[in-house]
Length: 128
Image (cartoon, rainbow, N blue to C red):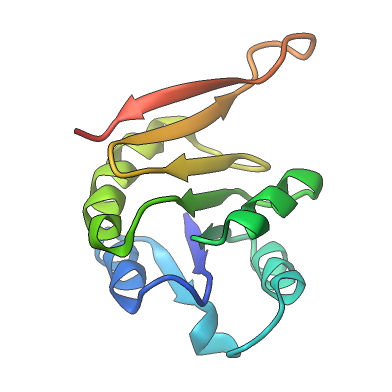
């Protein structure tokens, strides 16, 4: 899986993705200070899952086609632990196209669409 971390993601988190065997790149290594639209365009062009802590950005992703997103919705002190626990469990839910995974301190929320006529439900995976 290819990952693009937003500029609000700590360098340490991007390195964790790399250590877990993912092709991870930080927006800061491409171009600092770019807009959310530009970040999204890079993620789409490079077919990368976008990782962000920005709630507004993750809400915006609900309205566009993308290759997946992980919204880390926890304080910086818990992000490293949560990412390390999430990634092995997330492999069963590939591909992530147009899904927005929400990662909190204790759980991972994954939207699941069972049949086209049913509403999207949220599957929760405990990280404890």
